[in-house]
Length: 133
Image (cartoon, rainbow, N blue to C red; front, side, top):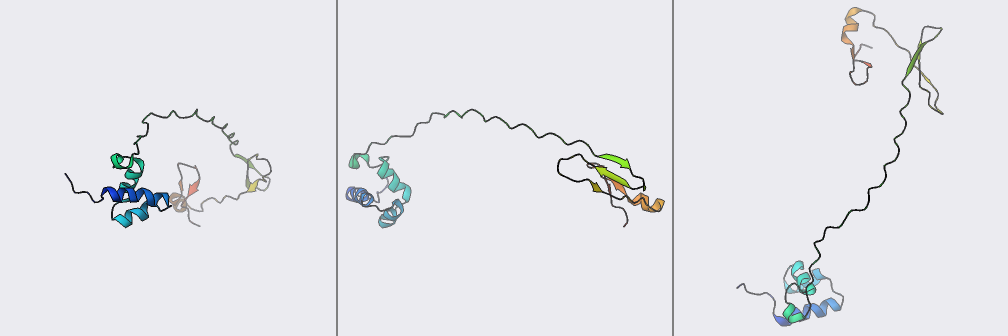
């Protein structure tokens, strides 16, 4: 049997100190024991034959989760970009989005075959990348 760090008088003093408003950590320091040891005394897990506190373990019932919340409606997918040729041979991109003005984009074709070979299309976006300035 292991040697006890607390005597019965100490356990009763733990109860008194807690009633006076001391924290479990403060009491544990006073008696040179761990905070869980003080908690066990106060809940009746240990020393219940001295304190008279009956330990009541927590229920291990599985708590049913509440009904799942309804998912919000997904936002509508914007229409794909439309490319149209302007009168001045510049291409314009338009996306019909409420409250947003179309953005004008100028595209420059590579000057040589060598420059064109350095350009590649990004497979995710379909846009050109890596061309010479």
